[in-house]
View 1: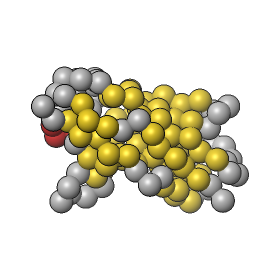
View 2: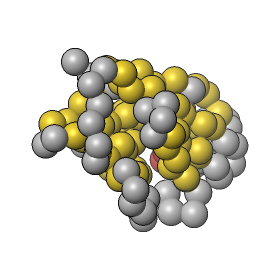
View 3: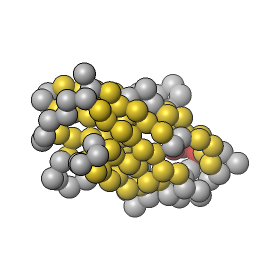
Length: 115
């Protein structure tokens, strides 16, 4: 059984920074892809950034140049450094692991960007 636990959400002012972390535990095989998604109120869940093992990260156009995804394969963790945050970045952020055609999700962490 794979479990994902996110941390690092909170309230931040526009222009500020926040770092999200996700720890995966259980039977985690490679290759796999770890990613961050988000879901704003009243909107569908959307991909923010993805990091395939041994591959190049990809980002949604809305966060390019502001967010950076990184992973530690030895620790099975993935992080999302978010800079220059905007009110429209407010959402619940979910960690995702895709391995062996299975998708696993964390419970999410709330990020609120407001003055």
